[in-house]
Image (cartoon, rainbow, N blue to C red; front, side):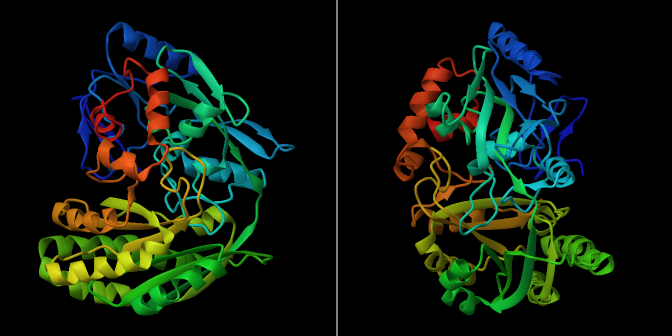
Length: 439
């Protein structure tokens, strides 16, 4: 599906439709050298530079009125090292192409998010994640990075080479340079058994720690205006493969999750009073099912119904209290919320500005259908999340600034000091980075 728009007017829009930009010029480099040259020429013209992937971020993290770098020619696998069990991939490669290519080679990432439309560099730069008891975000699986810095030089970094850059640049927000290649840890392809099951809201919260501890990957969706959740448990399996059937898969993924869901949200946007009734019907439409397949066919799903999203990472111990507060807020407020609330987890990692940096985390994501006014709901939800020292997803709607973020990220100053060293002239600056990192 098309995820970015660049019309004749030179206007760029993100996937959610809530961010637009008019860059002075666009560059589509076919090599790292061409990209480095574009950065040097931007400096000569005193223009800022941003790279954009598929526009799947809901913040303006990639927006620029300077030079917009489109990396769609920087794609494909550079090298597979079966001894080290790593793959080096060009930064503009869409995750869906990487997952399929790895599967053909008998390989897989350990964990991934539930959408695979993003480019590899866009996904890691914003901290894209799935859910996991022991395995973290895509960025946590990085073993090496190639980065074009503000002076047009190419910097390689890993745990052994430029380790201080590696610590930060795995989730670099586009602030330290433009990522051109990424080396990821991989493993032999394996099977996952997914068990999807409806469950009451109270039971999910009462048994949350147990469900988290007993499953390699646990997540759930709660449908506001109901007491129903849809839970999903993914665990490694010895097989055999038992994929979702073609007809049942079409019914679940295309007809219900995309077709009927699109219509339901259009109705709800036009008649908000209908939303609680729609929610009750929708929460009963997803029935229990179990299937076994290779990882990317279990972790990911097509998302054709467009939305706008906010997501916060909380200390895992705080998530059940925060969810109760969120539910109470929605019931008191009179808000009509058409999309389910998504809850996932991640273990602590050592990436400077990772939302899971230094703490075991749980993520709460709130969504609304594209074109629906979202500010009132997101503002109220954000109050709940920030009361628990929440950290906003870098690519999703939030209102936090550098002053707040410095309080919830112990290594925040380490990142900004590195930025001062690598980009003293703020070649990669934009309004979003000015807000979240400071001037």
